[in-house]
Each structure stands twice: as C-alpha cells, then as structure tokens.
Image 1 (tube, helix red, strand yellow):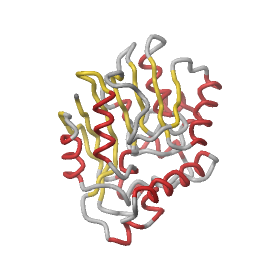
Image 2 (cartoon, rainbow, N blue to C red):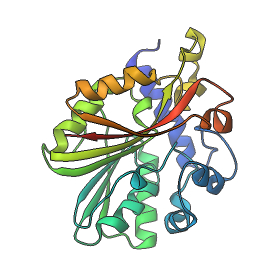
Image 3 (cartoon, rainbow, N blue to C red):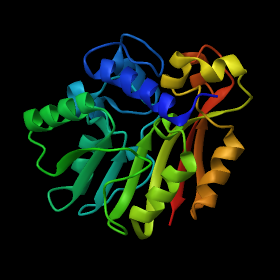
Length: 245
C-alpha cells in the first residue's frame, strides 16, 4: 500500500491533467456523452451541463434522491462542475451549491463554466474532502460521484460529511466498491489508483465505514455491469447509497 501523501499526489496530478484536456481515467473513453448516459444521466442533463461533463463518475448522485428548492448542497470532488450545475437547477435561486475539489485546475475550469453559463448560485472551493471547508451543521445535502474511493482515509471523509450536515441531512453517493480482493500490485498501480479502483474498498467494508461515521445507510441500487463497460472485468460495482444523519 502507498502512504496517504503519495496517493493524494497521484490523484491530484492525474485529475489536473484531465482538467487540462487529457482523457479521463474512470473508464477512459473518447465519448463523454456516451459514458454519462451509461451511468444514469439523461440527454437533457448532459445538454444542460455542457462541457462540464468530462466523462467521469460512476453514477448520477443528483438523481438518487430529491434535492429540494432552497437547499444548500455540497459536492465532494466537483471537477468541472457537472453535478453542481444539475443540483443548482434543483435548488433554484433561493438555494446554493458548493463544489469542493483538490485540484486548482478543476476549480479554475469549473468557475469558468459557471460564469459562461450564468450560474449565480454555485461556488467552487479548493479543498480536501478529508477536511471540508463548510462549517458544522450548515449543509442540507451532500453528493459525491466516484470520489470517496480516491481518498486514503475514507472514515475521515464520512465523519467530515456528518459534521457539516444539518440534523436530518442526507448524502447521496455513487462510488466504486470491490466485489473481490485486488492483488498487491493492483493496489500500487497508479493508473488504478487514479482510476477509482486501486484505493477502493470491499463493498461491506465501505458500508460499515459509513455506519461507523454515524449514518443510517440505505443501498439504493448496484451496477455490476460497469465492470465490463469501463473496468476490464475487475470484480467491482458502482454502489448507490443514501446516508442520513
């Protein structure tokens, strides 16, 4: 296993390149639109988000549960802003969406996309999801799309989410979890680490960590076919979860 600092350096370097126009990692394919459709986004949503769709992710967290008008939404690992812009439409002008990402290049790109498309209720902050910027009990909904698996300390991430959520707040997660053990070589493989696999946990371990952070957990759906579509048959799935405080 690589140490936490090294893992974060690998992830940051990789997604900085993607922000600059390189091919995506979580199923590296040319057609971002096709990838987005395969993981649960509608044509309307893809059109709405435009160039913010980088072909990343393993689900559509904004579609997993109801995001209401006027709510404050936090997106972990917001990238170029795809899920933030979809959430912004749901919360409306009386609500707010905050995107947090660890790469300066993604923040710059997301801010440019927000300005270009006139999103006034979205802001993007540079930050680590293991140490979230928002204050305690300040967020209604947290969304995360294939990002927690990239964090070395996943329990810390979920404890941070629990801290910033209001009482009764909820988190909607799409994430890659393992259905079998990886080899030591796979766990050290930089492409697999950056590609949402090398640092992923076994399914049951992942769910237990969310519960250990204090949440009530409900599995919403599971996509095992994503392994064949995007991950060369590695034993894994995209897990969709609702976690309530």
